Picture 1: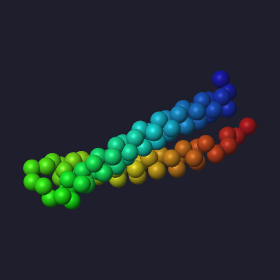
Picture 2: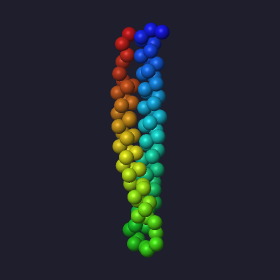
Picture 3: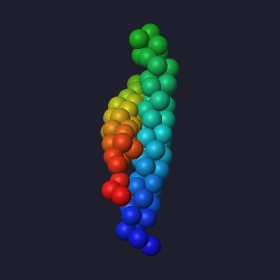
Picture 4: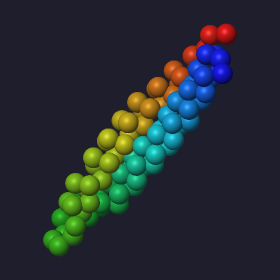
Amino acid sequence: MTDNTDSKFWRFLAIALLAAATLGFGLAGLCGAAFTLMALPDVLSSRSGSYAGAALVISLPSLLIGGALAWWCARFLRRAWLRRTRP
């Protein structure tokens, strides 16, 4: 195999991995956003005995970390997609 073929294969593999990571972290952030929105009414109603605080402890980091990692992976994916390989 030539060096150009190897670089195309590794580029394809990197783009596929970044796409999967972007989708996975995006879904984690979306899940965190959904659970945050579902827990907020219980937190604001000040009812006793609800587990809304525990839901926020889990959902807020998922929202923030998942969203940040999805954004970071999307940036790298865009760079890898737009970068030209040498002929």
